[in-house]
Image (tube, rainbow, N blue to C red):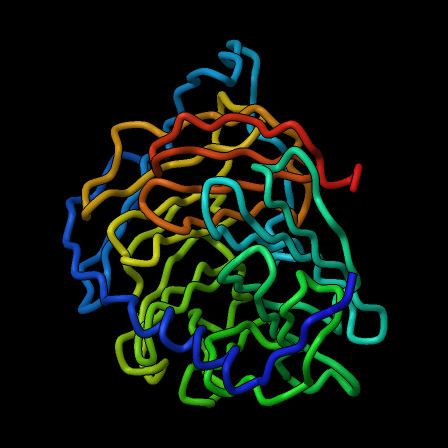
Length: 317
């Protein structure tokens, strides 16, 4: 199939319009049980640490315990585009790039292509068009675009206008103003990062703190803490979110939803086989969510679930 290439300015313009649509959260919910929440000028999101099992997951038995997973910065990322379309990126290394996988049939099948470098962020606007940020030659922070689902890449070019984790320093991120900033207290590793708009972002830190900024990373405030937090996702309009974490009583991962600042009473135990660095969540709207846990992929029609496993697994791609 002939590969179509588009001008970098056109691609970036489309993504800039998408990012500009994101709004600042202004939630101030009360702390839920098992979660420490603090008031903040930015978004306050809380999550319940007590999971409940619901279909299609099996109910955990009394001997089930949380999986022993080392919390590390994400090496597998997901970008939801819709109910049928999602992208997954494996980080790889600067000199040994990972891969980018795309589904357009709800996860039944996945196309796979080489990433252009080390991946620290993947963002897609369709089944064909997307971009990744990360490190190329010399592990310099850069951005690449594709218009054929990762079959070919345009770039590298500057990734300065985009929120992204950086290639080499796990404690620093690139803000959308092009500055390197430190979200977590004492320079702790950034496990996951969600950019909301130019001045606003939320970072999940090692230890479970979720930190937010409204001044492009100059200052950060802890908005809530979830023990065992592995990943964080927000819908584009910032009306809903999902925190994925471990908890006693669930042998997989717990997906806890937030809607308009009010946390659900319980999270859902998503029975799966999570692996280190390979748990991620993303929502393309308040109604379309994708969750990756190891090689297993799940979708949900709402941030509170229920989560259903898709037919295709990532290791079979």
